[in-house]
Image (cartoon, rainbow, N blue to C red; front, side, top):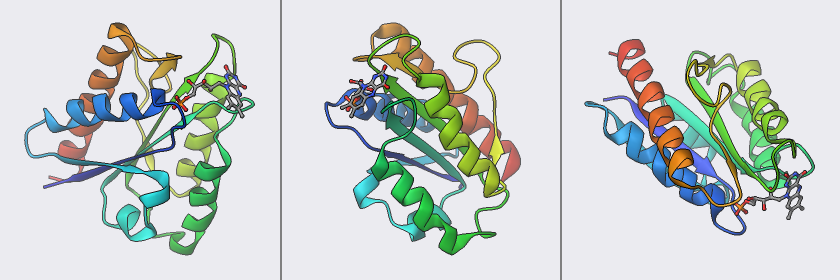
Length: 159
Ligand SMILES: Cc1cc2nc3c(=O)[nH]c(=O)nc-3n(C[C@H](O)[C@H](O)[C@H](O)COP(=O)(O)O)c2cc1C
């Protein structure tokens, strides 16, 4: 049974809500198991034991927060061992054009360097879910669909 880890940092709760919706989407895929953890509670072993790693961060100055980058930097310990896993990213920002896409891409860059498989989104937020402030219904749907998409890919890849 493929396992997904959704690890997030959130100060005012917006990114946390998105993490919950993504979990809902993944869990709706048969044979998928999903866990949500705060970045501060995520261990390197959690990453190693997951087939799918999805990282969520608020947009801070157009990139991921320091806490998220810290986990990314620590993950060098397992460089080579995350190769071939599925990765994804999502963010909440204060403004449209406030650097949300660059935040997602900054996370995806790290995951790609680990050799992870990244699924783009054809219909929707192309790089991964984005919320401007608190997630509304359309962001909720975006997150659920993203979870489904990655869950379905995981079932195909790790069957
Ligand atoms: C230190 C700091 C830097 C921020 N930088 C940006 C930014 O560059 N662009 C933007 O649109 N919003 C920025 N914001 C706003 C947050 O991205 C936004 O409030 C987000 O929804 C917070 O997510 P959270 O509720 O998960 O903590 C910043 C907020 C803080 C505290």
